[in-house]
Every structure is written in structure tokens, then in C-alpha cells.
Image (cartoon, helix red, strand yellow):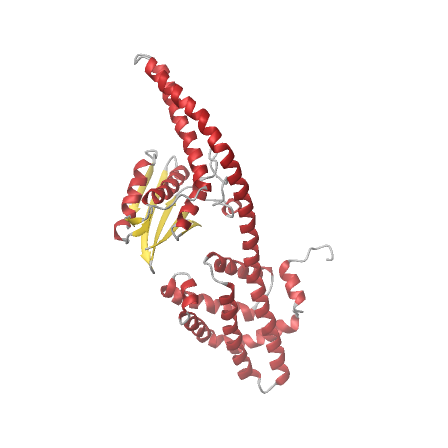
Length: 383
């Protein structure tokens, strides 16, 4: 066994001197605490809803508290019942990733854990105050497991920080490269465009074959210029031309310019019922052009693309779904980084630009698997 590498969770347990005695103590406490898990969950979220900062970080707002209380009861059950193995680590790590994603400040997490520490300590005293040795064992085990919980969740913040630093370094290198070649590429493309114009004027209407090739050159010239524009947009902070924006019009305009084969259907649902947002209509249109183009590509040659909109808790959520193959887990982790693509001929700028524009509008974009297969991208913007 000495040749088996120690996992992070094993290292943490060794550091706090976790052992079988602790596991037995927590399982003993579980029998007394389980009937009060619902009460503990209610106390936990009552405390959060009374704190303005913590309430603002709560994903989904007050409307989601009922569901979150159910989740909290399950969390408490696993906390005291175990098993405290690698599956436990993976589950807790996923919870920590959610905290990172919704931007929950770390000090709120410490405060929240203290709510549980106090409540469970009270239950332990009520159950074992007549047996000082048993009470001490339970208190010791509680301290260890809650410290392990904090360590696991702080590990997710550390991983996210390292990932952000790596992204910043890649974007810095990317920006230097784009800035140096963008202008140099514009010059030869400008020469090609001028020459193309001259050739069009000298070729007669009767030469359809030559005209067809000139049209192809013009199309590819547009593609090349579009790539350069997207590259430059990634590194420049173009000011937002803010105004009140009706997203139904933005989505309609985006859908009108996205080419799709006859076998791919497009359904727009709920757009007229959502409130306006404040933003740059041109840049927001680019967000949905990129998402719709990706969705149509994924659903082709035969499939479906749907855009669904809803308003909740002061924000607007727009989901762009397709019936394509979805995104594999390896790609998913870096899906919104520049130069990451699932297309054979793509260069991976579309989703990176979507994320950048959404962030500049105070919003977010997330990927999830579509129920039944396919991809779902959810854009959230302040209403």
C-alpha cells in the first residue's frame, strides 16, 4: 500500500488525526441530530436571509430557499453518517465549486459553518451531557469534520484562483500576439479587397465561372476580416453604448442573420414577456449570434434549436439549447477560454467573446447539459 499515492482528502484527514473513533462518534450523534436536521436548515437560511450581503450571494434568491433547505438536510445527513471517503470528497468539492461559481465570499462560508457548529454542539450537549467522555469524543469529532469541510471548500477557491491566474497569463500572451498581427493582416487583406473590386469591374457578365470564383474569394475575405475583428474585440475594452434594450428584438435580429439548414428548426419562447435590460444592443446581438451559430452547427444537419427566456429575482435568463452531441467533460472545463473549440474549422473565439460581453453587462454565461441530450447555454443579465 505504500506505493499508492495519498489523496488530498487523505492528507487532510491525517493532518486533523481523523480516525475510527471520530467516525463512531459522529454516527452516534447522527441518531440524535437527524430529527432536528430540518430545524438546523431553517435556522441556517433564516440567518442568511437576515444578512444583506449573504442574501445577495444566494443563488436564485429567496425563491430557491425551499429547495436549498432540502439540500441542506441531505448535506447534514452525509456529514454525520458518512462514509467519509473519496466520494464524500468529490461531493463536497462539487458544492465548493458552486460557491465559487456564484461568487460567495469566503468569509460568508466561515460564518455559515459556524452556524452549524453551534447548532450541532447544542444537540451534542443535550444528548451526552450526562456522559462527559462521550460528549468530549463527539465534540472532538465535530470539530474535525467541520474543519475538513472548510478545508475542502477552501481548496476549491484555491483551484479557482490558480485557474484564473493561468487564464490571465494566457490572455496576456494572446493579447500581445493579436495586437502585433492584427494590423499586419489588415494590410494584405485590404490589397486583396481592392484587387477583387477591380477584377469584378473587368470581368463581363457572361463569364459565370470566373464570377463564381470571385464571389468565393469575397466570402472568404469576409470570414478573414471577421476573425480579425473578433480577435481585436477580445483584447480591447470597447465602450458600451448603453440604452434600454428589448431582448426580443435583439434575439430576433440575431436569428435573422444566422444561416441554418432546412432540417434544423428554431423556436423562440417567452421573449416578449421578459423586462428590458440596460446594455449595448450591438454587443448583445453578437452574444446571441455566436450562441445561435454554435447551436445550429451542433444540431445540423437535422435537429432543433430553442431559445427560452424567463425573468426572476431582478434578472433575465435566456437559454439557448440544441439537440446536438453536447460538450465532453474535458472541453467543458475550458469552454469559455480563447482558442478552445469543438468545430473542425473553428478557432475558438465565439464563446470567449460571449463571456466577455456578458461580464461587461454585469451578467454571466454558463453551460449545462440539455435534458434528453444536447447543450444548453444560459445567459443571465440584470433586468
